[in-house]
Amino acid sequence: MAVFPSDAWLALYRERINDSADYRAAAADWEGDISFVFEAEPDRGVPRDIWAWLDLWHGECRAARIVDGEEGAAARYVIRAPYTRWKQVLAGDLDPIKGMMQGKLKLQGDLPTIIRYVRAANELVHLTMGVPTEFLDEQPAQSVEGRPEHG
Image: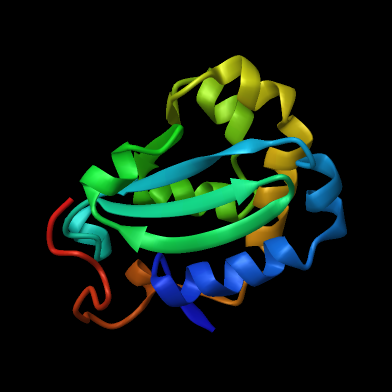
């Protein structure tokens, strides 16, 4: 079990992505990295923005890690929302494409391209649900280990 978001959680997520034949098929011609920004919610154990970066290429996740804001902002796509909104996505309570259309998730990048790959996006979300997860705000108070201090 890994704490969301963290490098350990992203490593488990990357394994799930790379083990998924469904994702590989849905994203066979996808090219581009994505950063997810979990916006600060100090009352939820997230004292500052946390940036997670995925290098997605032709149905494979070549890398996944916590990065600083400067590195994360250089991604082809950046999707940002408050931490608790991301929890809704992981729980299956918020469809990410609908969330982007409704402004609940903010996208920097080409929305029509994301929509064209809706099956791949949905598979990525589905795969998050299989990662054994502990949430920061559901644990006793602790430091934000393994996260860059800036960002």
